[in-house]
Each structure stands twice: as structure tokens, then as C-alpha cells.
Image 1 (cartoon, rainbow, N blue to C red):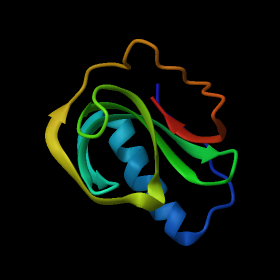
Image 2 (tube, rainbow, N blue to C red; image 1 turned 90 degrees about the vertical axis):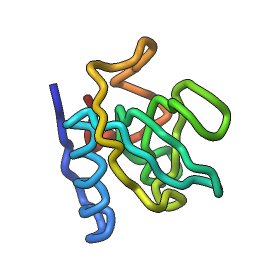
Image 3 (cartoon, helix red, strand yellow; image 1 turned 45 degrees about the vertical axis):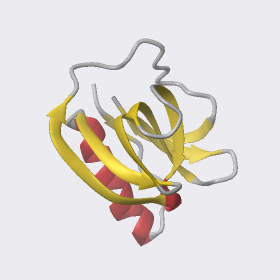
Image 4 (cartoon, helix red, strand yellow; image 1 turned 60 degrees about the vertical axis):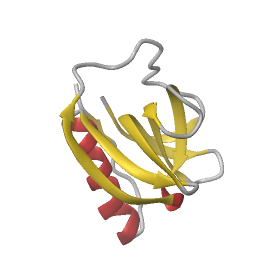
Length: 108
């Protein structure tokens, strides 16, 4: 099930939210640059962390510190592209009610 929770967002956040929520909805494997490293991820959840930063929670397939769930501040992400691949389901350990995010915008 795919859910989007609308709230008050800036125009930039609104468009960014929809882009990432589409990737989550479609279970698209995406790549992007984060902290000068190319990451390939399966996006699972998008929301605001306790400091109000728009944050993507994703299963990292490659890049950075190896495989596993990671949180990425969207403001530090650049060069988002789809890989042409999709993933089938949420990874083991996925928590749709992740407490590290104070407000969830969309999730698988």
C-alpha cells in the first residue's frame, strides 16, 4: 500500500516530495550523489526528521558504508536518476512507523 500524507510544505519540498514519493510508489531503484559518493538505493519512506529536515529512508545497495537502511537528508542529495530496475517488496527490518521521522510524507 502506498500512502501520502499532505501537510504544509514549501513549493520546492512539494515538488521534491512528489519526485521521491513516485520512486517509492513505483519501487524504483534510484541512484544519486550524497556526500561526494554515488549511492544506489531502494527508497522506502520519506518524511521530516526531528529537526525538520526532509529525509529519505532507503535500503542502500551500494556506495558509502555498504548495504543496509540509511537516512539521507534530501537537501544533500543531487543527481537523482532511476536505474531502470525495480524492487519487489520492503526489505526485512523496514519499519513503516520509523520513529526517527517525526512526520511521514509517503511510504511503501
